Amino acid sequence: MNTLKLEIEVEDQFLDDILINSIECGYSGYWAGFTEYKSEVPSFKIREEDEDSIEGDPVEPWILVDRAFILKGIATVLKTDFSVCTSIRNYILTGAKENDAGNIDAECTDVILQAALLGELTYG
Image (tube, rainbow, N blue to C red; front, side, top):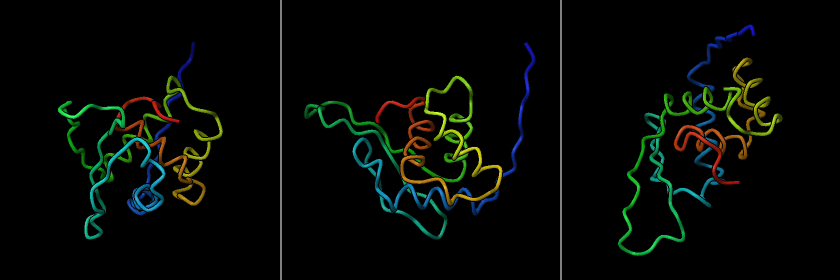
């Protein structure tokens, strides 16, 4: 078997656009909690929240969502062993190659957040 590895350079603005879309659309709110968005350095914090948890259960720690976190999510989604529908993977790949987040919608940003935080597509 032959292996082909792609290296794609993405601009900070591309990562910022995805980060901002992920917090503004609120699509991931059905499985995650968010802190307030900080615009001076594009970032916010996220954690998985289980609506079935019982009072007293341990609470997940807050994780910083910044450019590195978004990049980690994209890289995870683009791995061939990451289970996601082809169209979402293609939207993300095309966006990264073109440095254009225009086709990366709320569903795609939700997948990117889950990939970075959970390592898999757990919700939706």
